[in-house]
Length: 363
Ligand SMILES: Cc1cc2nc3c(=O)[nH]c(=O)nc-3n(C[C@H](O)[C@H](O)[C@H](O)COP(=O)(O)OP(=O)(O)OC[C@H]3O[C@@H](n4cnc5c(N)ncnc54)[C@H](O)[C@@H]3O)c2cc1C
Image 1 (cartoon, rainbow, N blue to C red):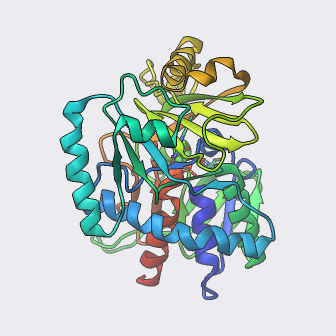
Image 2: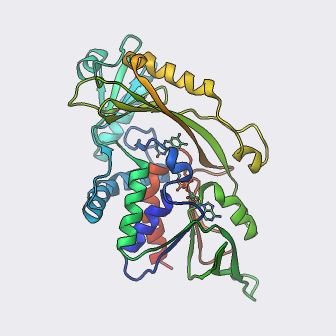
């Protein structure tokens, strides 16, 4: 998703000739597992890079989805009915009220609903243990795979070349003679060929560590496993005209239409110490059952739903630094990292792409 977003954004500048190399087909990796919930206004990040990236993505998403739909002539599944977050503790209300005031100053809406108001608007939710419902109408959800495929199709239409099924295995590097100068990456080597290059952007998620190790500047990104599942009910839940994403205790209920829902996700840290051990970790079924039970507790109608697919993915989480990593690789003048988006890669992909576009414009 991040690589596709960057490729598309750069393709809009005719000065760039863009090539994407991926060892897999588009929309694999962590992206294939994601639920696509974009929590910007409703997140507690209010300033600095954490908010700035969210706000930039939120704004770009408003134009990006219609722009891509028009370009490729296909709809992209997305839900613009907002996100309802369930507040179970009255003691948390002052924090939400303070966030509401900040968002109002920033030009965004956040509504705090009483349990009665929540029941009226979302009668499928159990309000017994609820102190309030926090409603963020400007946050949204988008299908990560549909959006990634659309970004790839859009980028292709704008002249980007894709080499899928080619793993990057190394780089040609020109070392400077002066001690203070940075090295230059002159080509990317893959399992199939050598691609000469002026600039490299690594949007390689969990593939980042081995590649940066090869360049003598290891960037540690480890996996955090997430499981989710799909449910179906013949009769959709709640009011047909109001189907927001619901978040309760960090568990999302994502309505997909026609009685289909995604529920997730678990957050499971690896037990092993090496990257290989971590990447080999397997999901614990009991953890997903726990997630489903928690979702049923706040939305009892899910108990009668039929369980469809169950899946898991590995989120790329930076170790020892904040997510995401959008910066030049130390010691190189033409190599950028756009990786380690951990739990927010779908939300932050557009802002990441814009940050890379801006950085390249200043080279
Ligand atoms: C269960 C689950 C739910 C999630 N829900 C959400 C959500 O609701 N909202 C949200 O914003 N985020 C969510 N996420 C997080 C999100 O999925 C990630 O942050 C995002 O997908 C990261 O995108 P990416 O493009 O950086 O990584 P990836 O999708 O992993 O892509 C990395 C790409 O790099 C390629 N690559 C790696 N190494 C090499 C190499 N050597 N040569 C060539 N290619 C290489 C891979 O093939 C892959 O295509 C969720 C994640 C999980 C697991």
